[in-house]
Structure formats: C-alpha cells, structure tokens
Amino acid sequence: MLVARSQTIFHTHIHKSYYLDVDHMNQTFAPKVDFFDVVQSISKALDYAFPHIVSHHVRVAYASLRISRYLRYDRQAEANCLIAGMLHDIGVLYEGHSGEDAQIDTGDDCHARIGYHLLKEDAIFGAYAPIIRDHHSFQAGVTLTEHIPIEAQIINLADMIDPLISDDLDMVEQRAVVKNKLEALLAEGFPPYMIRAYKRLILQDDFWLDLRASDLPVILKQQVKRFEIEFNAGLLVAYAQLMAHLVDFKSRFTSTHSSGVAATAEYVARIIGFSEVECIEIQAAGLLHDVGKIAIPNTILEKADKLTAEEFERVKAHAYYTNKILDVIQGIDRIKTFCAYHHEKLNACGYPYSIPGAQIPLIGRIISVADIFTALTEDRPYRKGMDEASVRSIFCDMVERGELDNRVTRVLMENYPAINHYREMAQQQAREGYTAFINRIQENQLGPTGMDRIPARLMSDTEAKPTVWEM
Ligand SMILES: [Fe+2]
Ligand SMILES: [Fe+2]
Ligand SMILES: [Fe+2]
Image (tube, rainbow, N blue to C red; front, top):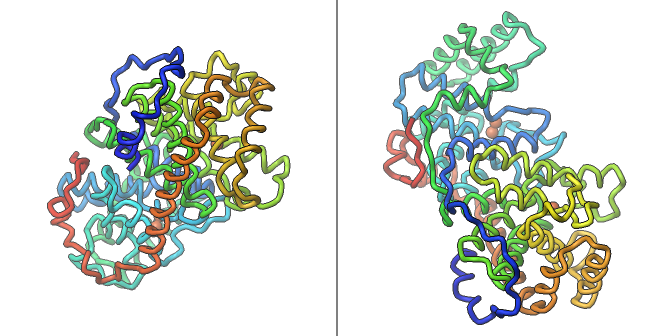
C-alpha cells in the first residue's frame, strides 16, 4: 500500500532548499464522516455512470429496507439491506459498462461476482461483499435457501422489481404491473413469504410516494441511526482506493492512472515539506481526482483519434462530477477542493470553474502538475508514454503560458528521475493489482455453490469488519 512504501523511501530525498511557503492544514486530520454519506457518494457515482436509470441504487436500498422491516428481520439485517442495496451493482462498471447505452441487471450474475471481488478485501465495505455476490442468485438459477444471505435475497427481489417503477404510470397501473411481476416470480420459485411481503408493501401509498420522491436519499438517511466513521489514514486511503478502482477499472488503458497521480503528488509534496498526514491527504486526493470520469463513456475515454469538440466538452465535465460525488461527504472539504480544481490553470483558463490561481491551493496545484506528468509519461490508447525531453518541454511551455505553478514544476523537474521512478513503481504495483483482479474474475473462483458461501445469519460473525453498521 502507498502508505507503507512512502515511509521507507523518502527521508534521503528531501532537500531543505525545496521547502516552500506551505499553507499547512490547521484542521483535525481524520475527520469524522457520516457512514451514510460515504455510501451515498458511491451510489451517486453509480448514478452518473448510468444516467438512464438514475436513483436505481437508492430505490433498491429503500425497497429492500422496507421488505426487511416488514419481515421483521433484526436491525443489523435492515442496515445490511440498506447499505448493500446502495452499492449492489458496483461491479457493473468494470471494463467499460457505463454510459447511456450500458446494460444493467440484464440477468446474469457476472457483475455481482465482480462486485464481490471489488469489495471483499475492502476495509470499509468488505462485510457487504457476500450480499452483493448473491444479489442475482435467483436469475443465475440458484435455489434461494439459507445459504444465500437473506439480505441478498431481499435485494434480488427489489432489484428485479425496480425497472418496472415508472413515473409514466399512475398508482393503479403501477400496482398492477408490479403485482403481475410478483406473481410471475412466485411461479418461477421465488420464496413465497418474500413475495407476500412485497405484495403488502405495494398497497401502501407512502411506499410509492417515497420511492418516487426526489429527496429519496434524504428519506433514506432519516431511516437510519447516525453512524460516524473516522476517516483516519487507513480508511481514507481505502475509500479513495476503492473509488479509484471504480473509475480506473473501467478501462485497462486507465487502470493505473490514479495511482500514478497519487504517487507523483505525494512525492512532490514530501519534497516541498508537507507533513506526513498532509501527504496522506494528498495521496487520497490523487486517487480521487478523476472519479468523475465514471460519467464519461469509454468510447470517448479510449478513443485513439483526436476528440471532437463535443467529446472534449464531455470529458471536461469530469472534474465537475468529481466535485459533486465528493460533495456528498461532509468533512472532506479540503480533499474535495484539491480534486475539483485539478484542471484549473493559474491564468484562469482551466475548467470547469475557470478560477484564477489565487484561489487554487498549493496542494491543488500539485495534483494538477502530478496529473499532467502522469498523463504524459504513461502509455495512452493513442500513444506510448513520452520521453523525458518531450515532457520537460511541455511543462516548460505550460509554465511560460502561466498555466502551472512554477515552483511545483521546478520541484518536479529537478527530481525528475526519482519521481518518475516512484510513479512507475506505483503504476506497476497498481497494474499487478489490476491483473490479479482480472484473474480472480476470470478464474471465477466462486461458483454458485462455492465453498465461500456462508449462511446469512452468521454473516456479521464470520466476516466482521470495522464498519459493519447497526441501525
Ligand atoms: Fe445487479
Ligand atoms: Fe440493480
Ligand atoms: Fe482529470
């Protein structure tokens, strides 16, 4: 992990002469953040990825919560339904399944297995991986027994009903359409007691009104007890790493980009004289800066030819989406700013906010320089990584045009070999992680009756993670 590597490599490289006038953070590091907000930032990212089924995740979470309440499962199961519901299709993003034409929940459980692999080692969301793995078990032909987590069965049902929910139908039509589907599912073998539960729910007006409400995330948040997690170094980087995976794993061409930016920014920041905790914050910002690219279709991100003006406009919007996704989490304003401004220029010719340099914090300028450096030196779909002379020349031109911070660029240029080596190492490590992830998926280690299936009611005992959330 980046944290461990950085502690061993840097002390010999820092030269006093590079110490700049650093605006050190004066707020407490490790802010306490609301766990619901953290989850919501992911469901918001998924909304951006699938604009044609916006709010799918919060609707499935809400319906799952209501089903679990109706069936009188305990509060742990309710919480699991809500959190896993908001995350359940997280595996769909893998290798480009995003954009207007993306299919979601088409029947097979491939994305459920991918979601499991994305989350199972995760320090924050690992406990929810088995639920996500099984949320399409019924479509995959698995008989729903006690070996399938009950939360997965509930989400499975809510997920199959959700595409039928439409603002174009009046309440009577809506109830009839859903009732027909429930009867069909019953005939296909879905557990009768769950079908009965959903049939009762559809009779309740408040259920439909909530499901169609524009402030459904607020309604959801009101249903649950406030649960804070401390975004210490480990959890902050874990969150940032997961978000980086979501966006980077969309395409093998970008599968290591965020890691390269994080490593470059961290190295530059250490030379400049930022503290250990600030460097962790910078690492996190490096990992998170491009998360808004989740909203950009791969046809554009992977395009080998020059982008059209319209395509470029769409790409430019990603920093805005990054800001919106992170905006959901109260308490990480500094990181949000560093990420949101990573395409701003000192001469106010950047995007999307076109703010002048005076408003761009030093760390934001570092992320910006690190992003350009990584983009130039890594291989892209349309060219190999550039050589040192070409990179130096581009940076020289950008500084001359008043776009980049001269001092930050000087630190980078004067330490070029060491920083480039560190970036390469970080991207190599990320590449190995990506390859291992793909191999796990392709080996398909978890068959429908695989050994790693666990009885639902034991889930919180057997897969205890620091953030299993109780309501
Ligand atoms: Fe799904
Ligand atoms: Fe879904
Ligand atoms: Fe970017």
